[in-house]
Length: 281
Length: 105
Ligand code: SF4
Ligand code: SF4
Image (tube, rainbow over all chains, first blue to last red; front, side, top):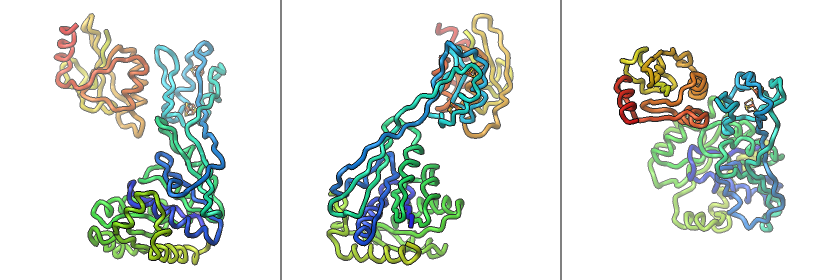
């Protein structure tokens, strides 16, 4: 099973579901929890975890040797991402637009473009004493870097037989990439008009790439029935409703796992796990 | 100094276009001779990233400055890193802006 947990925006409780479900399920099987929310990874903060590996993610960046360049423009014309521009000072690279495809190097007749590498993030592996069968893998994009995809790709390469992915929030390309890898998708949302709006956005994206999904309603009872009614109308299964409770909120804010404090939540995770496992774990 | 304006028409008396990369025309004015000419924006219908393509086009026109009501972020960084000065927040008839800029010098 490869389960992606997504949400239309941050702060809906996506990570809460991911960490609790991963911890719960790891009591009976090996689980990998992949934190692909690389701009703000925080899953590991819920565990007393020890880092076992810390690796760099690098991307290739072309470097122009201006003294060799004859200004033929072949590279500028070749670059599909418009990352190169010809200026008075010679060829100019916009690193945030470059996709590291290497086409410019290939096409340059003067060999005036070199292959350099830049570190854009880290991949970290963690183990937790309390959950020996759980491995947490986190992608962490360096501040100021705009291309999150290489980091996410590296995180996703860790997918094992039983994987839970904490996806980036939203519906952008990195989210689509993450979800494509998954065979099950849970969308976490809140029972408010905003939650419904975000859910509709995610649902449209998932339907576009033909991924079936199920919904988890967080802070249930606090808002209105809009989300539930919409799911009913659309025939989207709601697999879990997490009630709004102040004692839940306190534990989450303190970086704790709900399954360690609330038997009722443990039961909720048991149901969810059973539902997920019943279909091909 | 050569200045480029996004424009709804092809003369000095045209109004500036609010959209930079998707303007119909670019009017280039040489402030020393007050000569001007117009370039048709062939990238107007371009898709994502059109700002960058237009930036190259503008850099190729070899101008010193771009004056526009607004310029998108991609075109802006591209133009600035290519050494083209960008002034935004101006609107109205190109001729008036040129006169204003010349008077300020
Ligand atoms: S590596 Fe590819 S994307 Fe990057 S500048 Fe060269 S051609 Fe463009
Ligand atoms: S292809 Fe090579 S020689 Fe031609 S402009 Fe690009 S860097 Fe210069």
